[in-house]
Amino acid sequence: MNDSSWGAPPHAGYWGPSDRGPVQGAAPAGPAYDAHHAQQTRPMPIVPDVPEHGGDQDDDRGAARPGGPLFRDEMPQAQPHGTVPQKPDYMPTPDDAAQPAPAPQKKSAGRDLGAAIGVAFGLGAVIIASLFVVKAVFVGVIVVAVVVGLWELTSRLQERKGIKAPLVPLALGGAAMVVSGYVRGAEGAWVAMALTALAVLVWRMTEPPEGYLKDVTAGVFAAFYVPFLATFVAMMLTADDGAQRVMTFLLLTVVSDTGAYAIGWRFGKHKLAPRISPGKTREGMLGAVVFAMAAGALLMEFAIDEGTWWQGLLLGLSVAVSATLGDLGESMIKRDLGIKDMGTLLPGHGGIMDRLDSLLPTAPVVWLLFVAFVG
Image 1: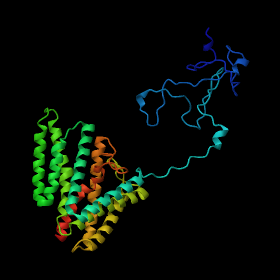
Image 2: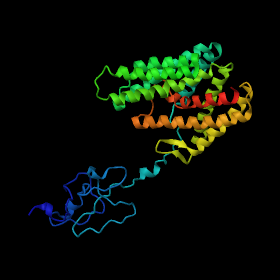
Image 3: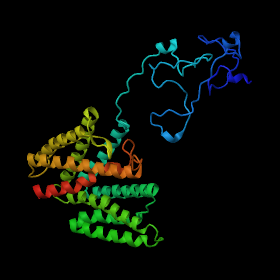
Image 4: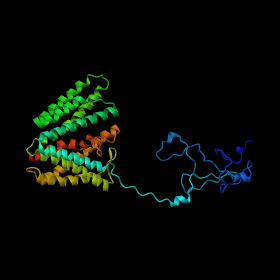
């Protein structure tokens, strides 16, 4: 009879001599071994037939795991006569008690704040210099931001979804939209938007028909989402106090984002839209509203001609809502594409589109309220 069939349960593994010394607590050996050999053997880990379930592992992976009790306080089952108790998966050692407890992790903002602040100051300097020196230069800044944003958006669409929105007509039409809005107002912007959509339809005809509908649909969406909404910033600039209006629009959006970030990061506990953007909280939304309304009251009272503080409260509230919705909309797009950022051009921020997400949908709201309040 084979020696392995004596005194060992099924699946006990290989038993053999060991040169590491006796194992304390070994049970008496079976008939195949004498007492001397039994004290110089040690068991190998058991591989159970059925894997345990738990954690974030899929149930159908079938990976074998070491046997052992599911809970630390679970008593081991009594072993049949003639078997050696199994060595537990983990035995505490004196060194474990000397190990210090891991320090609690600090709450992380998730971005390189140093790089983000540096980039923000750099962008602010460019905007202020172009805005208050020559208005036409600031229109050029808008055009550059629009073209880069379109490039980022169309590149991510092609990489992640295989959608080929034509960039050339979008870039040319986007630049024409911004300039037309500055020169001819809303009428010029709408005409440029219609011509850009037509150019996208025609340009895509030069390629095979497969995917034509999704490509042109994405192209028209990109034309509306980036350059057309940005045109309202150029239209603000045409007023006599256009530079102050644009600066108020930019500051309110930044203050709203900053208030949401600061309050949400410190006090946020209740998710605002967990399926879209898990990091946003209701407390952060409240911070955005409070910060933006306070800043709006001050800016409308002291920076805008014929503006009043109560108009600033309404303006700040509208900016907080539209900026948050714009941020959620961009998050929805990135979640659908399976990406974190639209680009890497701005360290600490991502891409240009990651900075335009709040500004684009806020621009028409602010333009409309300025027209209603002060003309």
